[in-house]
Length: 501
Image (cartoon, rainbow, N blue to C red):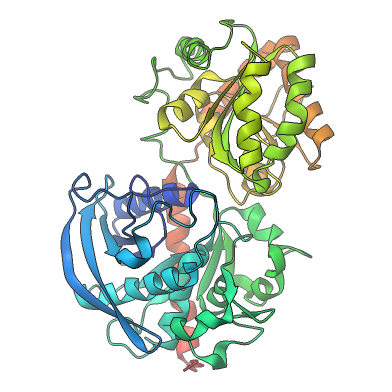
């Protein structure tokens, strides 16, 4: 029997403490699943202003911790709590860097200018924490550009460290579009040696690229779905990172994210007015009625109700939705609800949409967890027209709740949604390939016509989707395999020690 592993997960988000996107869910759910498999897991995130230490029942773990950055030492405090999944979670507190309203940007969606300093410090602090509390990880799991430097710090500064020298690194790419590219004037503070500021490592058009450097130093790289792993290594893929990912060879894998069925389960969901299951769908009809009331829609149990939840950014395809939704509402017998926030022009458009389509459209600008759960439960279709989607979670939530996804066939959406076959009635959703307004419009029309003309197929698809298993247990086992592979890769590298000091 293989021994259990000691795993340190470094991330910039973790639900429920601080969350902007899917990374927060992954950090919480994966760590809990790994713990259930018998591994010793710890998670480290920054202590942002939004984290209420008293509410989290956090205690002081380290009153003072020194972290060397460039030619100076930064000082911080560390707090510890226990997650709902019984995983120790550490909050690194540095008021100058993290005591702000936003995690990455201000209220106007402008990135903080000192982001490279903030997350370089946090990456180094996560490793210093291990030294100060005596935790000797077998593998350190980094996530996206914010903690990609961890893999570099392990190789450059801790290669002969008694506690960290044997630790392997695994870097997960959740979104290759965000790479952490900043002016090279920050590089002295980062402290990874100008000999590593080269085209193959950190340099990118005379700037420093966090994710690129992290990929170079990582012992294993994973992407959050098999399709996304292939896309970012394909011609022109990875937003410029494809050549460097391909240089890693078999050290790149795609592992589909799972979802937390303790939170996302229509049979037990406390946010729903009525619970239901695949064997008893009457409760879903009541959730639809409640959703219509909440969003001031006409109460009609038979109308096709389409919903969506997300960030109003270009990647998510909401500009396509904006350009076609009035045509959908004018020409199809449907209702539409949307929840989200982001780019100001999209916020304004969707905020005013209900006034133009009273009783047919509803919107909520911002985020509300109860509304998000109710949209998943009460809608007939869930819309995800992403230009690219590394994994996506909402389509898996939707399938669990008997809400059929309408998605673009990209990344994890393509991996998890089986396209409807109108001859056999098989499938669990509706997919389109071309990222265009016409493709989106006609795929919505295809789904709506199926809803009215072939209801027996809709029911078959609902039951198929609700039976699919996207639990974290399967994905967590694949991560354990990847951790063990990273450890073996680290041993291979150690045999000739090409360190970069």
